[in-house]
Length: 367
Ligand code: AHR
Image (cartoon, rainbow, N blue to C red; front, side):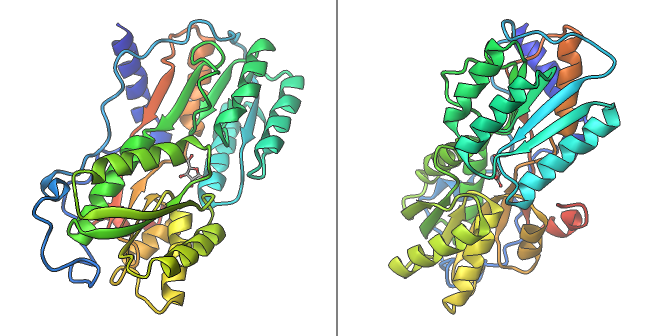
């Protein structure tokens, strides 16, 4: 029954215009590899790398046994809602696209939406949320920067405000279904596994990898690392030799990539937890006189416009989509919750895989 409830909600997500931005299941294994004949991709495939013969992992199954939100503060149905949205940063196209999606859907639904920007600063976001709580919105949408933002999730619950987490989790001291209604997000572990699969294809299963991690303490940074590490364990010749926080930004990604590539001149690949850091790494590779997509293969996550262009240009091998268009599903959950419908405590967005076979098709509509 619980699972059925989840599936209904997941189906609902699949049907929303938001989810349609990125809701198809994975592209099959046919990746048009710009680097297939590169120096980085050694001529012979690693025979013992089982990722090479495995199908593209695609989206994960909806998690089993998901509980419904029973104990979170209730939301009374009304004609006109007053909502708040705490965004954690506005420093990359993904964040801007997420905020734009929330704004557009609020306008469409006639919801008054107050938005704050945490400026990529955990303390600032905590302050923002406290200030939003004091304004007593009907509902609080919260895209947490890092795990400790759990503190103010619990404060909102104590103040009787239902919270919907968007795109990231907080630490487990905030209880799903009690301190917050639900979290709507991608499966970040699966994204890491899909990136590892693409990296195996890009490098024939033999790679000396530099990893650019997302912001320390952010759930996508933890999970994308975990998924990638788990998946490359199937390939003995794929090794991460250095891994460092690039804060999900292009500038920091470039700076860290430069330092790590200099320290590891034998590196043949870069795995970046988001496109912005991958684009920074591509600049770093070029500034060292090397050719991205040939000497060094790059794989990342998000699917932003510049990344799709980099795929088309042969500089980025693949980007696993992480869809930022949360507006439609966020406000749909709000309405359903107010109507007394059961809401599962986690809702997973399906994502695509972008590579040379399809990047052109999505360029015009990308953010
Ligand atoms: O939480 C999602 C991640 O956060 C996106 O991959 C990244 O670009 C953003 O800042």
